[in-house]
Length: 260
Image 1 (cartoon, rainbow, N blue to C red):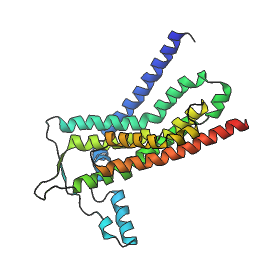
Image 2: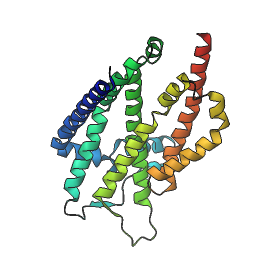
Image 3: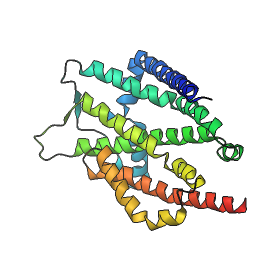
């Protein structure tokens, strides 16, 4: 294709991706009660799935402290447009999550024709793998990182007279940031796979700069999470494990290239 035709195709693929995101966002917007009561505010209630599992674990190991019966905070809307703004924001975030597989498929269909036949066969099933990693990241962030972070921040008090009354904007922003951060960071193994295919990510190099990578991971975790050590560790530790797994993936790619 000529350059302008490439741009035209890319434009239409971006438009279709944005349409898909807005369609899912509209569905989420119209499902206000379910979205906010069940999904958004779920981690703020003691009957949330994660807290119930922790309680069962506490019963099994005889550790009653793991059972969370009360979250000492209340949610408020201190701005006139606060609730409506968060309704729009949460709908767009859910729209992005729901439409991500299709949006990535559109992007991949634009990139794929530029690959050689051997390269296309080597990256067969990319959309499925990327979508699964994205979904795993969303679930990990929503069911593990978010409830533990909320419990820690809600229970932390400098003095009993200081009440935790969180603004709905702060609550939703924290939840969305943690979930999306986990979702995109879970793409690390796939990114390393592609970089290893083109000879950039080498397992020996990744092992050599392991300490530097860990410092970068903890720095990123400090940037994207609330300012508490617990949230940073909950993000950083899985990322370190993903980095180690990515070294294994890079080694696998190198070994397969040698056999071919």
